[in-house]
Image: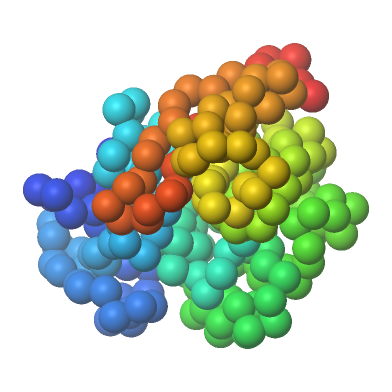
Length: 230
């Protein structure tokens, strides 16, 4: 899939950029002379999406050495696997992961993670306010991920895409249907409303990946910006 991400059986693995160090008690394994970390779909919606997508799995990942924007970074589990993939040991690939969260406790964990993993930039900010993010970005990004379980999550995902996503860039929305009280119906209606909003904004929707079994009431919606964007 990439030089730093592989699937083996039903498992997903990333080449550990900090050998010998676990982030969330994950399994470690020697493969092809390197140490690899288990990327659990139960602890990462991106990991779950990669395992369940019907598209090319690598299409959900950012480019090696690129700059990405991750809204709702949490305590850093997925961020650490992204770092393995696009930064590597001592960030020899030169990647940059702008890791945004509104919770000080999460930022403390991200700061601790960043000390061992250069290339991770923790940002204490509100994803609903794009102007607070602009100073941390070096231009637009080719890959945007949002995992913010709040009412209005679709609206501020689209606002972030409009402000920060490059033409032809990939935008992934981790949608928690229970956090959309203003949409009538159940999960499928919530997913459909999000797809309609993304299409209306000009994004192409590539796939809706339902995560039931790993993350109930969640779907990972994969979008792509057109060549003329925004």
